[in-house]
Length: 172
Image (tube, rainbow, N blue to C red; front, top):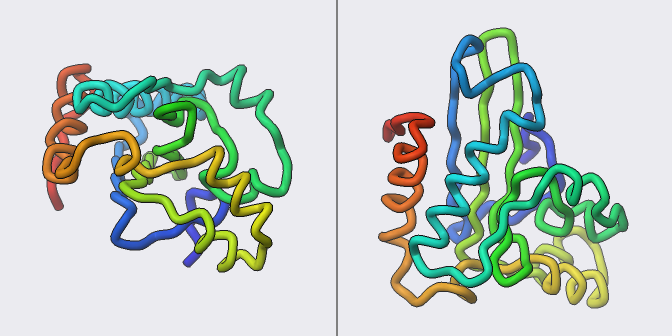
C-alpha cells in the first residue's frame, strides 16, 4: 500500500502501531512550516518512551536529519532520518510523515514494537548486507523496553501529548 503522506517502504503489520493526528488547517499546531509541524509530535513521543524507561531516547534535530546519509538503505522508511523522528539506543524506533491539504494536516507516526530488517529487505528485493545495515539503523521497542510494554505505550503517548498541551486524542 502506498502512503499518501510519503516516505519509504515499511512493514505495516502487527508490530507497527500507527498514530494518525488529523488537524484542521487553522489549528495552532499545523503552522506554516512543514518541518516544524512535526516537532511537537516527535518530542511528545520521545517523552512517552522515556517515561516507559527506554534507554538513550533522542529526537532527531532538523540539521542532523538534513545531514543524514542518503544511501540505498535510507530508501526504507526506518533506514533514513527525518526531522523530529525518535531514536532509542541510537536506532530509529518511530518514523513520522505528514500530508497537508487545504482542509488541514494529517500527521502520522509509525511506532515499531518489533522490527524485522531481514523481512523488509527481502520484500524490497535487497540483499543480506542491506538488511544488516538496516538493522544497525532501526529497531523495535521490544529491544529496549521490558515486556509487556504494549498496553502501557498508548496511554503514555496520549499522556505526553496532552501534557504538552498539544491536543486531546480521540479513539475513532
